[in-house]
Image (cartoon, rainbow, N blue to C red; front, top):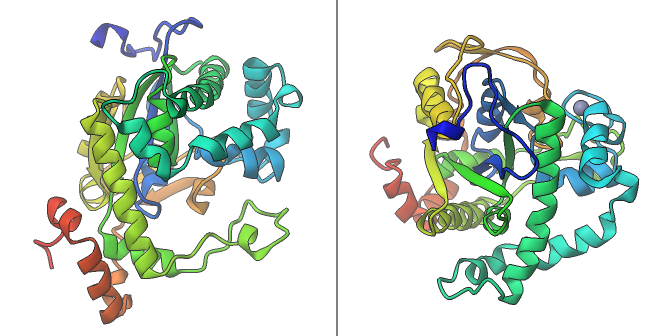
Length: 331
Ligand SMILES: [Zn+2]
């Protein structure tokens, strides 16, 4: 395996037939995954492209801004990617693709895609392969346009990861990021404006989604269980606890560089902060627009701000995984 890894000059054979190495960041939202994605993207030979799952609707259809600040359809990087992948975005049948997405990229199809008895010719598997084939074309174009053999997609959804696994054109590696469910629940209650949504026509488009603590606990369970199931089915996966990552970011990034298959060249960061450069992220947390010096600071506001009843509810609903990840030992 190491022979195909990235060397000191960040190069790896990247002819059209080689499967694209895609490092997929998975887990619940509000886990610090955008930070992990951006730091990964600054490693040699790695290109991070944000949450590709939202590229289609938010970036291409609505014209929301790329991480570089330009409306995505006008971003030179994404324009070149569209040309390489599909002969230009005008030639890409977005409506048909969104219908295909609806028909397979949903949590309820995970059991069908994960079943040990799922044959290669099962109906769900055929749709997943077609759907993931578009991602493979896109990742391959990102690889060509960026010159980076490793592509990082921080889409996070378990259903998408199960689809990507069905494509022979994708060498999938999953970074499963977890964070204390109580911290995640508190974060989902906050109303946050989306800076990229200048073109928003509804409040739902202008603001990030908010979830009740009960809903966020259920989503947290579903996504985390989904990624444990994916790992159990043989997809290369590494688990990262957000709290451990913030406490020791340099050693965490060294391990992630090895997992991704590149050199741990970390001159852009210390144990205290990172120097972030803008990236062409398709969509994601508003933090994707942050550039320059960013201190590593644990956000544990939930310990004082999440109400007692909500805290008890989320703890009860997520107890098995909270225990598995070691979060019950600290409180
Ligand atoms: Zn851009």
